[in-house]
Each structure stands twice: as structure tokens, then as C-alpha cells.
Amino acid sequence: MDKYVVVLAAGKGSGMNSRDPEHSKVSYPILGKPIINYVIDAVKPLDPKQIVTIVGFGGELTSKLVEKESDIAWQKRLLGTGHAVLQAKPFLDGKPGQTLIIYGDTPLVETETLRSIFHIHEKNRYDMTVVSAVLDNPKGYGRILREEKSNRILAIREESDCTFSEYEINEVNTGICIIDNELLFKYIERLSVDNSRHLFYLSELVQLLINDNYHVGVFVAEEMKEVYSINNRIQLAYATKIMRKRINNKLMLSGVSIEHSGSTYISPDVQIGQDTIIRPNTTILGKSVIGEACTIGPNVVLDNVEVGNESEILFSYVSNQKIESNTRVGPFVDKRGE
Image (tube, one colour):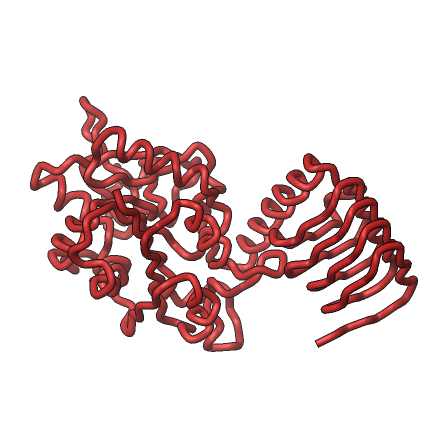
């Protein structure tokens, strides 16, 4: 069955408090790589037939980040998540298959988790699968409403519309879901603005489908951090900390020595050969390629640098350069190419 992906990336991200009115939230970098590109990289291995990214606020910048890998649809008026998905209709309407809807500000989601969601969706023959998480503090999230006896999902209630008892529910909607593509565009125009904020919420699809006897299931995420949305710079720093640890651990397991992981910042697209030692206070960005048995650091910044085998760089800033094997750079070198 064909897979499609809709990435929601139109929101303002006012919590970032930028002086630049066109700086989209999903363009902020984590270890030198924009938030939204982590999401695109997570969905690409699913082999989707088509990716559509919905842009709006700061859309020109967001479009440039993803246009080589995704179709672009504009949400000119920010009227809610349901209205955002509706903008993908010209690209996806009438195509049989399953559509993954995911937020562009969830950089920690991993491909294997997305594969697991698709597996559950297909195994149980769900028409729609909602991804939920259980939180100690669910403030800010829509709540998953379940039938008391059967525990099946009944609806998703946005927090602003919750009753007191619903507000106490700690199972929340992450915003990620999979839905039959033809059903999606059959029902999405039935969404209403009958809620406190007068917006078209994608979450209303759950109740519409259930009312018409379609099968809606729930995938409960084991790791909330994977479906964690970034809305301010505190959350950006938290995601950076998790991503840094994830990248560093992967490199160390592959044969790279990192002497002080807490002060080492390496972009996810960097390649480092076996037996290379990364010393403290080192940052390696972009698509840098470091050879084998090198010593990098301390106090080094490399940005889009190619380094040959058995080279040493210390106390230096190097960008857009090629360094041959068996070369020593530093201390106190600044080499910046264009």
C-alpha cells in the first residue's frame, strides 16, 4: 500500500520570541541542522510516494529547507490543523494509500518508531491510528477520551474545550496520526469550528470516523521525547541535549572515542572514521567527513570540513576546507573558506 506524508509546518512559533518576523519555528537549528530537516530525514526511509509540507508563517524560509524533498502547500490563513491538512488536497486527493500526518517541530522522532506505528495500523486494519502519550503533566495537550468499559477511543478533546474531569486525563494526543488517504479528504471538509477557539482541528476526525463506524486505534508512544514538540527556546535546548547524546553514543559505538560527551557537539550528517579521538570542547557541523585515527580538539570548531586519516587539529576554527592525511592544524589557526 502506498504511503504519503503530510508535514505540518505553518505555525507562528511565537514562543521563540525572535525579532525576525519571518523566522519560522521549524527553521531553528539543532546542532547546525534545521528542526524540520530532522523530521524529513525520519520519514524518508519509509519510502513515501509523496511528501507534502504545509508552510505558512515564515514559509519562504521553510520552503527553501525542504523543497528538494517535498511538495509545498501554503496555508495562507492559520485556521487550525485541520485547515492546514486541507491544503494538501490538491496533491493527494483521490490517491489510495495511507497518510502519515506529523508536525514539523518534532525533531526527535525516529524512523523505527514511525515504522512501528504503520505496522500496528496495518496489522489491525485501522482506518485511522492516533499516536498518544501518557504524561505526568498533560497541560497544553488535547486529551484522549476512552470508553470506560472497553477502553476504546471515543474522541480527542482539545484542552481549551475540556470539562474538569477531562482536564484531569493524562493520556494526550501527540498530533501524529495515520489515516486512510481517501477517507482523509472525504471527511476533512466536514470539520467544524464549533469549539472555544473557532479553529478547524484535525482531532475532530476521530469522532467523525467513529460515528460512521470506521475503526480508529491508538498507538501509545513509549518515549514521549520522540514525539516532543518544540515551542520555545528552553524546549529547543532540551531537544539539543537529547540529540547530542544520541549522536555521540552512536559514534562511540561505531569506534570513535569522545573524551567528554557533554562538551562535544556533532551534527547528525557528520561522518567520523574508526579510532579517531574527539577531545573536549569540540564542535563539528554540516556534512564534515573526518578520517580514521585522527585527533580533533580540544577547543576546535569544524564546519563542512574534510579531514584525511591520521590528522590532528587543535585550538582552531576551520570551515569549508579539505585537510590532507597526516596533517597537523593548530594551535590557533582560523581557516574559513566560502
